[in-house]
Length: 164
Image (cartoon, rainbow, N blue to C red; front, side, top):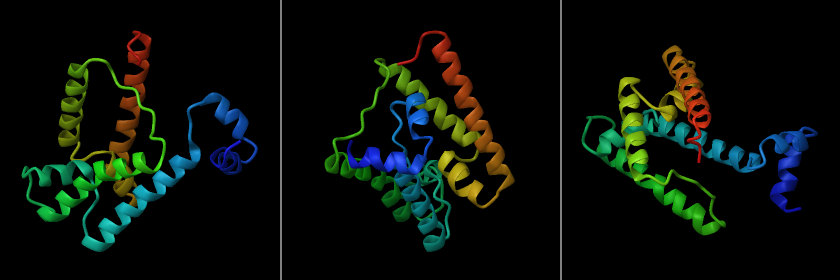
């Protein structure tokens, strides 16, 4: 048993076997570490720059589609996302991921997600991480909507045999 498995069992204290049986691909320790890093990035952005670390808003600013926060801050934050993923991939065995075979599905999903973030005035990072932690009523409603929509979408896609 590797160190990650031991840590997973310690984190889940007695519920580890049952929980990991239900979700065999679960990586609770990595999820915990990732969550702490996301929260830390949000806190640094808010305390250091006075801005919410909403990725959709930062991406819009980096692409020149909005006027705040300052462009260098937005561009550096957005550039750090793939650079951080490359760093993790280089330091570990990588994270297995599966995507649909069709690029068209990915493009449509990206466009729908982008439209939703504009309609909802933010994305899961802005509302779910930063807004909920500030107890913003609007962000709590948005996050519940994101989660419910995601659950319904997964259920429908799987019901029609479209899961990958």
